[in-house]
Length: 156
Image (cartoon, rainbow, N blue to C red; front, side, top):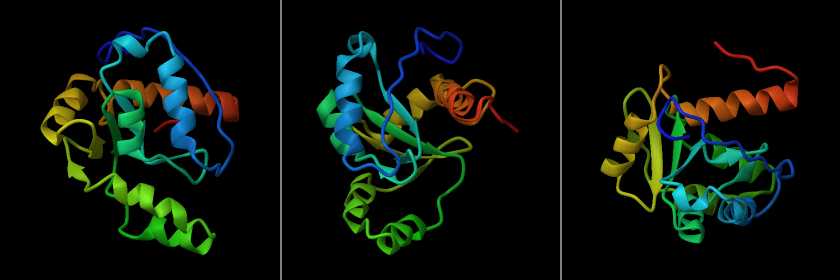
């Protein structure tokens, strides 16, 4: 997206549920996209995708050369995801959660960032908000994902 109102394109990929090393797959996907040269940031909702596939934010930023920002509408309960991963025998993924660093409070959301200072991430997040607390691209990706997986999107 270019700002909150202009969709420049849509690219899709798939990753296995609870798959390992999702960061490498995402980095390859982003680098191979024709949009890669014009990307200013990679925005994600949370640090997990496809169930419990954990994205290593600093590694994603390093491997793509693009800042990576993860947003959450609410502050995640401390230790909950780490506990779940440990119980399921996925303790090796906890390192990726820890690598994301501290959560920062933004305007009506929380975020972690890599490859960019929190002040720069705040600017990108503010510039890409539509009517929602989350950046419009993240909101739109969520709607598209629900449409593909569920047959229609659900929203509040």
